[in-house]
Image 1 (tube, helix red, strand yellow):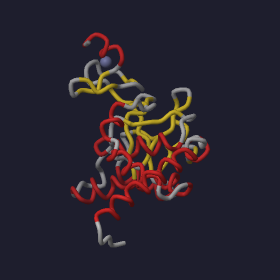
Image 2 (tube, rainbow, N blue to C red; image 1 turned 60 degrees about the vertical axis):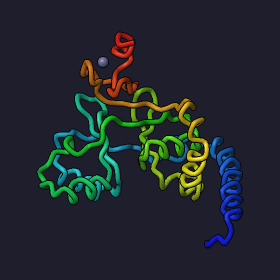
Image 3 (tube, rainbow, N blue to C red; image 1 turned 135 degrees about the vertical axis):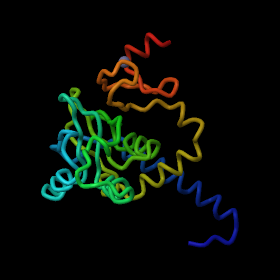
Length: 207
Ligand SMILES: [Zn+2]
C-alpha cells in the first residue's frame, strides 16, 4: 500500500500498535505447550550434516537439538543447511557440532505465545525449543505462531521498535542453555556477563 501523506504512515503505525496490543492480549491466553510440535529430535553433534539432513528429510521435521553427554548444547535448523553448508561450501562430512547454533534459547512450557513471539523477535530466531522439568519437550516455530495469529511476529517487531527502551528492561522468561564460557560446565541458565556466557555459580563469583 502506498501512502501519500506522512500522517497516514503515522496512523498506520498506531493502528498497528492498537492491533498488536489487542492480539497480544488474546495470545497471552494460549500456552506454548498447546501449539508446539512434540517429540523433538535430539541427536549427537558427532553426526555429519549428511546424516542430519537425512533425519530431517525422513521425519519431515526442520529442527535438530544437538546434545553432548546427555545435555542439549546446540540447535541446527533446515536454514543452517542453506546459510552455513551451501553458502560456505562445507563438505557433507562436516559434523553437526561445527554448524550448530549455541547456546540454545528456550522457553518454559507454560509461557504464552505473546512472550514466545517477543523472544523470537528480539533474539532473531525462528525456532524456540520448549522446556519442561529441565527437558526439551517440544519446538515452537514461527510458523506455529503464524498459524494462530499471522501478523503477531511482524507486529511484535514493530511494537519492539516503538518501545525499544522499555522492552530492553522488560524481563523475559527464557532459558539460555549451553556450556559456561568460564568453567565449561553445562547450564540451562547462562547469563551474558562482560561479553561471556556464564553459569549462575561463575556469575556469583564474578560479581
Ligand atoms: Zn561456570
